[in-house]
Length: 436
Image (cartoon, rainbow, N blue to C red; front, side, top):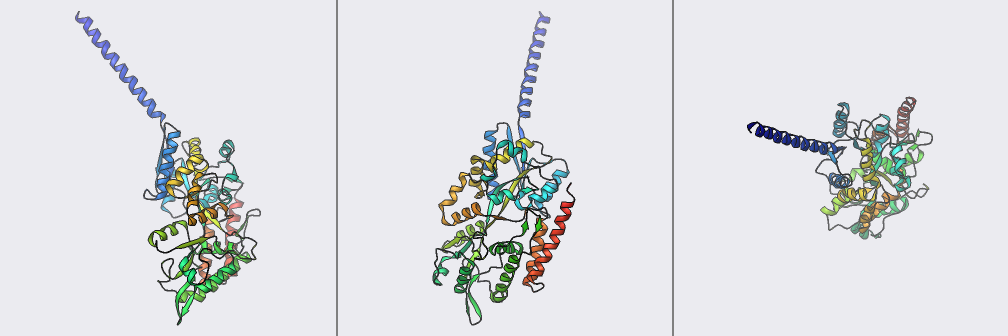
């Protein structure tokens, strides 16, 4: 009788142990079934862009049960000497590479050439992703030697011309329309600029200040109909005569008006009438100065350029790292956030950015305001983009130096741009010579 009860107790214990092991096994299988997808994001957690990723990540997880998207802040390919690039490089070198990374759009060829981005062509073909569904300039900027290494997530329209409507009206100009041509722009500038007793009391436009020297040369070079790279021949064309003419134009205005400028001559609340401006800058101005009415239009073009739309775009792209633990899942996320209606809407609605995907329903929201409508139109129609070459970072550095040398009287525009062209072409030729 005692032996029988002991056997029963042993049987019950074994049954409980077996049940415990089964529960543990089932739990372990559930845990193993969850896959973590790591995405390196160049922005911090306090930014609006970060909110866009959280929204898109949540939407992606709903479509992919068992997947957890983990975002890594202030990490990604953002260029040399940046905290973001240093953080990502540390992870890659340490053998703990994320799956996906954000990358500055213009830097895609440079990181592709360095072997730090995976080509996406097989995925693009398999999923039927079409070039015509993307803003053309945004599609081109993520290519190198005919292969696609990333897809553009959002675009920055560069640059609408914005103006103070009250100052336009006071000068007898149409406050609802900006100057369409360079000649009309110069006429508006003259009417909007007033010198009294050798003192500048109102100013048309600080046209030599377009977010740095390189961006200023790019912007005015394209206004004048110039170009900076011939993709077919792979030749750098910084010294294009129209770029030289544009830099001479900038210098003439700088030398004439810079000595008279004072701190109160500032857009939009001061007495500066026009600016080339990012969407973020305009949003900030409208919040800080709600009483100042602002107009916006495409930037003017040189009548002799043959190019009535000199606008250009920047923005960020997203790609797969070569050592990605989950490359197929990484592509699923990239495709979702850049090339589907649901994914682009989730990201753009929360981040306030303009998708490069032309079929995105997120574009509709930008049509509800006359200012953001202009930004959307420029984003959709822009034809220019900084040269898609792996030496683009140095190209910008040299252009910036040329800009300052010319404005400071160190070099003539033609000589400065010719020097840039020679130096960057030598660097590009070295890159091309090393390709098998």
